[in-house]
Length: 476
Image (cartoon, rainbow, N blue to C red; front, side):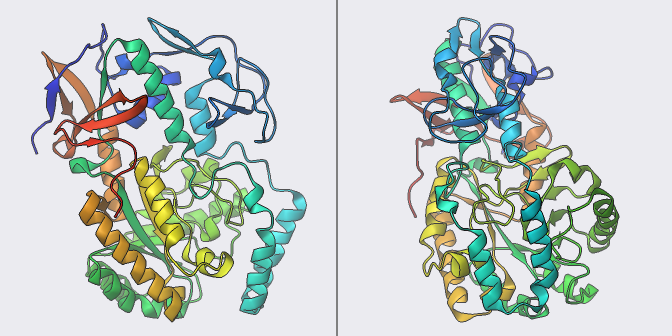
């Protein structure tokens, strides 16, 4: 595909080459890769000394410092709405909060308080005895841990799209102040795909490992490749010929923790010791991606992991032992590591904790994610799909994804392919040349020029080819 070009509409004066970007606007620019002269944000007053919750409109819950109103320590009714303190001027938007800081706080789960000492002790005790617990006892304890989850106001359920809603609201305001009807940007996915699906398989037991050939057969029947994430020092051996059998069929290998005991992030020194071993296994297995057991995580320590991407942070963590969630359906960088968030409910949670017997929840999550052109990422365990009921559900899911790919032009990709694309896109930029825009940077041939505009009071995206996407994509 050649470089995408289109006419420049009402380019702001002094449009730059995106080489310099104010911190306040950085997150918005990184999301859209638009010319930075369109992203004019400023702070109206000094920010508060402490952080707390507030809203930006009735539907966007934020966490951070604010220059207006009051902050609350928990997300609950009665939060102050800072939208009444936003000023729109000819020179841009004057905000009472730092949008980049808020987005970072959400992505890195800064809004989550530290686990109570009692909960930490209980979690450690559970994982100490988990290997000898009957399965029924484990399920009962896990359900007890979920008590009251439906009453949690934040993050949203079944998918939290706060980061997307915040970025879209800011872009709408920028359209009102820019004097232009459209803002150009680099489309989120290559070749104009409407969204992306990633399938991952976490292997926990010897039975799961032995079932992988059959699981690859099932995936291949539906035209889907996946990442198989192995535990290097777990309850099964990871032989070179086993890894080769996965790669030879076009699937890929990821590292899942070190030994799956749920204690990777308990202690900094122990984490560093384990991270050294995990990195060695990653290099030995040729694995570019990492996932922590049970989705336990601490993004502040990720600099010790020598992987290209991580897959450990859920979009909304209501159903997970560690609360929180990154509140976005898009990949994002944590230092040099690209985070591919887990945006759908895990298979075990769906079947054994929620006791669902259909894929309706997965379909609803998929619809909500695609509505924001996001990443639909799944965790399906070989250890569980051995059993007939979940096996049937999984095939039903694969059939739905195959239909989605056909009807909506959704990209079904390996995690490493998403990693390569998102890194390439992060180095691309839109450059004005005469009366046209074109995309520059390595891999720009896969990039697609798009425009954001206001249609019937809502933000709409339109690809340069003329294929418009307003609101939800066609249902599959």
